[in-house]
Amino acid sequence: MCTVILDFSFVCRICALFSVFGWGVNIVYLFVVLVYFYSFLYAFLCISNFLTHRIIMNNTEPLFIRFAQNPILTPRDIQPSMEGLVIECLLNPGVFYFRNKIGLLLRVAERPLQKENFISFPILDDLNRIEIMEISKKDPELNWTDPRVITFRGEDYLTTISHLCPVFSDDGIHFSVLEGTNRLFGNNEYSSFGIEDCRVTQIGDEYYLTYTSVSSKGVGVGLKKTKDWGNYTELGLIFPPHNKDCAIFEEKINGLYYALHRPSSPEIGGNYMWIAESPDLVHWGNHKCIACTRAGKFDSARLGAGCAPVKTEKGWLVIYHGATIENRYCLGALLLDINDPSVVIARSESPIMEPETSYEKMGFFGDVIFTNGQLVNGDELIIYYGAADEVICGAKASIISILRSLGF
Ligand code: MAN
Image (cartoon, rainbow, N blue to C red; front, top):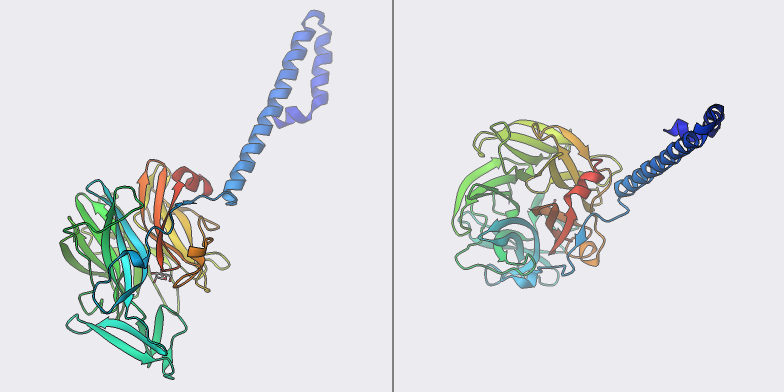
């Protein structure tokens, strides 16, 4: 086509040749000119299509539209779990449908009201009762530079203790507690610093809950299940420390369950996303590393899966968080092979969503967008996310646009 466009002299020579034959010259001339202009139009469309694609790839158009009502939930919207504690952060909810309602499994982070010159925080004792630790800020053995974690006498502690609280909504914006449902708390030696960031995977009429279980023994992944959000069955620690960000796929692939997870290796290796297989959701093996951190990019220090990947015609779409060494948390996307999800087909080069608004940039721990829950409604992907580790927000994107941003 392009050769035809460029070589106009070729057009003239053809016309001259056919003029020898007299009567046919006008028709032939018209035909050749039409082909010429059609080719020009075709090339124009190709170039404009390429440029449009480039614009989406370069993320100049926002993929996610934030809810106008953001933040939709703040620490003041929930009652503390007990007298003497205040809720500092309401964040990182798991998301699910339940009895025609939208459910969020909120992470509720609590601690006592802080006294001047002291840091105090709750932990569970050996009998799973709340015990308050109080340390003077002047203590030379205390390091409290990170608002989330302190080091005292060589041991790490969290500054808040988290539990999980299910809330429900008809419109996805206004949530409240449903009678008959119950909160989930740390309840053993592996969760004495709390339970956090739960991913909810629905398989049949059961909800599988993979959450971060934190204690002095480390950070691992616990599993519980429920049918009614009132009674929970304990299934134990499925990934030992150090591991978190575990999301189970909502269907079997070639007869096996799959889960994304994030072990961390402090010296050799790093904070990378892995995948594992299981016959029964409790025993996991055949671990494979599928995505590493990338120097100079938004996911240069660590990355971890959001929730259960979305099944699309192009593959499994994973929304994940990536963070830099400065702890700036953005979202990216991965596309995994539909039959073998350990194969990564595509990955975002730049964030598909990054902290921009005041409630994302400022808060308990600023510059953070962290998602571990979403809903799919046709082409619409609705994510719920923790902003600045303090409040809960929502945003929507077209799945087709996200796939296009990945080159599909
Ligand atoms: C970690 C987790 C999350 C938290 C982010 C940002 O990845 O503890 O719960 O939202 O850090 O602080």
